[in-house]
Picture (spheres, rainbow, N blue to C red):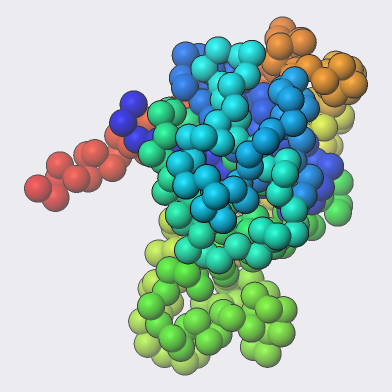
Length: 314
């Protein structure tokens, strides 16, 4: 595999299982024979090293950002799982809470040069620029949601803020940036709360900017994983979110599937052993295996379409 595939795991709310999903996806990919790097970017709350049974790291992301360790490969920590290595954020705190956008791009660019097939990034909670920008810079943007009102509400907020942030960085129009910036800063003098509102506002102003917005909507394709599912009603949340995003945001998201709430998950957390190793035949891991296979299939289909389009344009 020539291209490095970066999967970012976000969600907006803490406690929904982002680290659980990120860590176990990394293990499942490694078990398929891929070379995988887990990057723990839950800055201020990084704990994947403990979960993987790795000693507290001596080097972390801040060492690379501050150029004390210019070679990012020096941050790699081996694990007991064949094919899986870790970059920890355990040492990092408030000193890298507000990274510059150029620093984030430099870090992602360095990640892509490492010897790996897949890089799985575990992001922190909330909608800080750090979290949102790393989410947007990834190849596959995965959101973990639990079927509870606060998690669903935060997920919608995360999707909305991520899209507006993408517009801000992608647009070369100073006029459009002047509209987006106050929205991101929560001032919002234009009363724009969704991408649909933005398109309606720009249509009133005239010009071709709405074409750019619609192109960005087509490019922004977050995927949702529903975690801690207990009932049939819970299972319907993913499809309901997909419908709501299409109706109110003009945005098409992909619902990848759900992971059932199961006692084995909590046991593995208490035992500090990844679920994929502790209970490899349990229902949650079987469901996560299906989700992992679905992501890989969609990537293959996407790559095939791009190859066909490039051939048609020659």
